[in-house]
Image 1: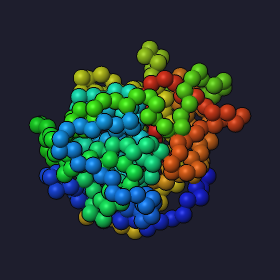
Image 2 (image 1 turned 90 degrees about the horizontal axis):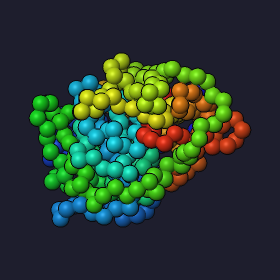
Image 3 (image 1 turned 180 degrees about the horizontal axis):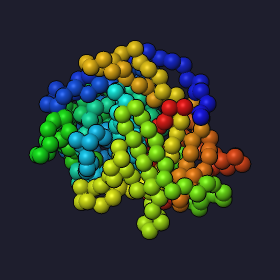
Image 4 (image 1 turned 90 degrees about the vertical axis):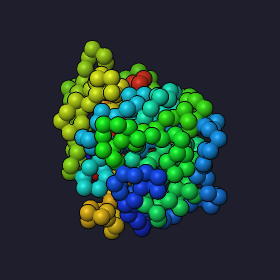
Length: 323
């Protein structure tokens, strides 16, 4: 399905505990030594005096099990990345650049894979509920602003009506002065008119061992309707969650020798390298090749003729599937 990436295998460490101020159940993450340590001083930022100015994106780790739905603020994200986590479940990372909703959540813990993925942005702000102790130093050394409840308690709150850990929410305005704008989306994506060709596609499903994403084309709004685990996904206002472009990106997913308290091993999703991908837009699917030679750059998607496959204007969902 996809080509094997050339990135070397690195050692990983399980993340199984949340930050001290988060009173939720443990959620595991992992660490891959040497991936993000570029020699910079620690850059995790505390915000005791309110939001900071930023020229880069806000990335938020979002819960994606049934008990966490409907999620809040997900419809405002410019890009939503979906990755496999322990037990075959899924988790989302929502990236905001053009607008910040009032509330986002539920917020969950970071994974080591997130650090590699976020290197494409210029010092992004990462909002997450915490991480395993051995991963926290790598997050601190990564070129990003780490903002967990432990570092920015005033930006988070516990919602009512849901049990922990599915009830932690973020107020973005307490972290950032405002949305940085489209220029901060240094993803490598190209936007514009649809390419010629492609295959008419009514729906596309991507399966993980214990999770399922389905995108169904709806000509009325000109969007893909999102369904999770066979259930239509909706906003907290009751509207269907949609995507203008969907990318099914086939990547190398390795199995760490570390596992969570239940014995579930932590997958590591490698987003540097190259492989195959399907780009869905305007009711059609286009076979492409993706390439991200270095972690500090974005990902390009090219067609058989070697030219970039352009995305439709609007939210992009990228689902990482095992090659």
